[in-house]
Image 1: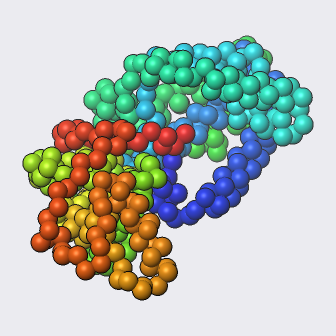
Image 2: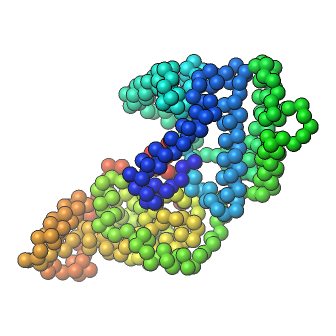
Image 3: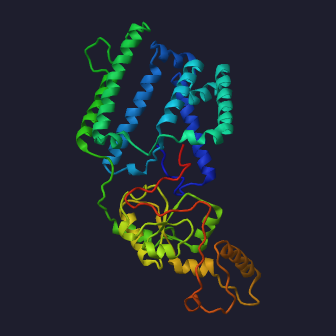
Length: 422
């Protein structure tokens, strides 16, 4: 799960490094305390003698699943904002087999090898060095195997969506599977590993409610509740907080200036969606480079993922404002619009007006930059005292970026940008 805090500008590059460092230290500390920095402990699970890793991972999975489910069900968490890693079935199966073989042979997975190396274990350092070498080697051969790494693409799918089952049933099934797996793991440890029953075992031959049994029963009870509670995803019905919408509409975050948008395009940024909400005819006549055409009447709750940063525009601000209002009321937290619409784009980017003679040097420098940007987009600066665009009505340029943008099918969600998450 990846929260979009960084993407929404809640902290910058420096703070993201601090957050990553603190999180890594905490995660490594917990792994070492659990004994996962020892290759013997990790490898023992493949011989069914010590299944501590198996138990911890299953506990983490069901705890996170239940937590996310109920936070979403009670409206605390918008589950649709959670990033889903795209599925490439064949390559990921092959990668999983290679990772598993390396785990068995070396006794570590990538995370535990870092913990082991940090605590001074030589085998962990060797494993980590091999992992780094493998990453470098993969980067070198990737251009030759890129096509194969993208075979059998299923997109961003979930088990519930793939098999058309309810999310509550899936949660219950995973919890039930974990409960059975814990019992089987303890049975294997006793039979194969000759482990004596302990006070924390579910199969402990004592007829009393131990803390471990209480925890297991609590998770199972939550699984049963999830079975009956329905989907954790928000519905298509909007809940409008008029006060918050009014505050958002009046904030600077609701609008993107034409010059700022032009800079994003020139820089090649891909962390936003630029949406033209006019009809197809107007879009074909002229549109801002990189924009996709999704007419206002075609906007649906699933036209894009809710964690996308979206910028709407139209001829003026009217249609864009309607699209902004609709998407914000449907729970899109980072929707915005082009301030001034296409009129501002034409006047400020395509055909900027030169400053008067004798103007300040700073104005001359700023105009020189605007002139260069105008030429990039196929426009041209206007001299001081030129007639307005409404009178001159110059022909609008048609500029195509290297990656041609095609208007999406409004019946399907817009694909996520690559390089999103890990």
